[in-house]
Amino acid sequence: MAVTPSQAFSMDPSLLPDAITAQNFVDVIGTRTSTGGWLFGRQLFNSLFVSGVTSVVGIGLACTAGYAMSRWAFPGRDTGMALFLITQMFPGVVMAIPLYILLDKLHLLDSLLGLSLVYATTAIPFCTWNLKGYFDTIPRDLEEAAMMDGAGRWTTFTRIILPLARPALAVTGLFSFMTAWNEFILAATFMGDETAFTLPVVLQSYVGDFGTEWGRFAAGAIVVSVPVMVLFFVLQKSLVEGLTAGGVKG
Image (cartoon, rainbow, N blue to C red; front, side):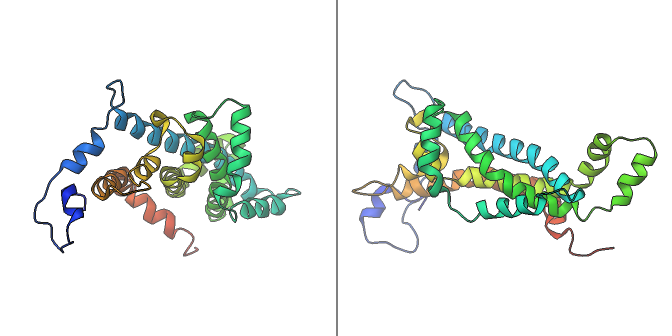
């Protein structure tokens, strides 16, 4: 579809297109604003910014929370972890209206910061659960040895635990990035200005009430998938280590 001329969709479909064209990609990537600005570039930046902030904030807060949940049996720990799990049972659409009202009160509608905060809030429970499970597999003897040598708790965490948890951080960060990158409902609800759209909202704009621009939709879907594919290749080794960690003890 992505390399099929738009006129071909008005004819009888065939297994192989009679002609191949890159015009759909040109139309998608070359989208301009009414003032001549590069609209697609702005929307690509929006998705990268929101997904990046979501991953950084989610990992930054969840790594300390997950470590605390793993190492200390304080009152309310199990209840807190259960509540984190319960929040993952509800789809984002359930929160759309209250979050819309909240962002409106804070003047954060049509704001990348507002959308990033919403995504980060929903990512923290998943990140905490994932990292807590990995921290459980790291022997406490390593921390005790470091503290016997004079290292404090924070030094032990940053110099010993976090480097060992690098595969889990990569997996958790990538999943958080993908969740924010692919999310549509909340982005479409909170973002009304096309210059604030993320790429999933852009894809939906090719689907109209009276017709669908299948060629551009397919081309856009391919373009949207490229950054995630690149991240998979870059983090491939860490992903394998992180996903298989804890499978064998000893």
